[in-house]
Length: 161
Length: 371
Image (cartoon, rainbow over the protein chains, first blue to last red):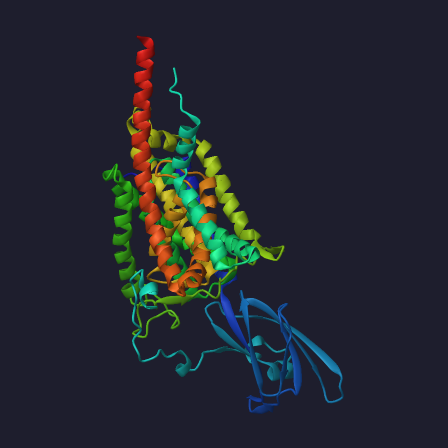
């Protein structure tokens, strides 16, 4: 069959191309990531960085989170580029604010943001305070029991008898 | 000379033509006091049902216009929509982008299935409804094969929340938390305490406007001509088979979108059952609205959703208050869904025969007047 390169063909071709590009854009902007916000004492390059006593964190324009030492919380975000605002006070009760932006790898489900590391190195590259996080194996391993697949469309009624 | 009908005959004719909506009005009139629900609760539930189901039911209109009857093959589109939703759930795409992406994924699948279904329906001319119903069952088997054995094994699916413990196949239920009510909550207002999902209603309005516009286009007129008489349409130079296929393709694609909107409202995908139920319920709702196999419009869609789902809402509680068993209402739903389709089909045939009889009488009266 010979392909007729008519004007209609090109219109359709361009339309499909636009839709495909749009789908890719949607994938990028709609992809959800979980940012784990960690306020625990860590050791970076052999140097111990202590957790902050109390810190306020805001990811993008979401509600601020308050974390005490050894706390960990999470925030679900969509898209790759985000901002983090850290507000904390030092021992003299002087308030400091750190604002940074970071980028989450596209196919990464979870990243861990270490607040003490960020506060200790506010100008450092994001790779220092943001690392990819894989949930522990026990959390994602499926149960041993095989799940019974129900394909009867009236099963909802029958199981309740 | 026209055959005169008495007022009683006219009234009986109107009642006969609207038998199903009248029957449902009577059921609802008895059921509402029995259920004990407040007007506010019922109104908010009806608004939810309208936003949830209307898109799916509107997708049935175009095949009726093309004379192909009620497209039970809409389940094919629903399956395509579900595949789109499973994939976006695995990829972790949430919110409105997730819904649109699921629609984009479902489109080529729906087009392919619709085209294939249309081809078969062209071969089974005159028996489109039963054929599309059986195609739905057949395709359900293929869908189960793909989802139960293909996903995770051939089609990459990574999420353990979706996969069965054995490592392939999708679980019975898929949590759509990422897109749950994403469109409904986009523009949610409250009117007298009743939540109104404006964004969803806007999408439905756009579809209704599209249907109205489509009927006036060349293709829409061709479909109408094909629906009225295929041979006359063919003689007029219309590509009958092609037009019929396009009507099924459009219906299937819209059914896929409708299923996605339906499931974003529900928030849970019943992987192996949702699509089977939706075809029957959508057809039943349209028939309850006063549509027939050969004639349906947007008014029938909304009247049908309101009456049919009002019965859905009140029947469990009415059943419970009546005999102490909410389960009665559940059975009543399924019974009524199948029952209303049967009644409508029987009434359609009765009406057709009656109209033929009336035309015969008219002809006899005309000939008598000429002599």
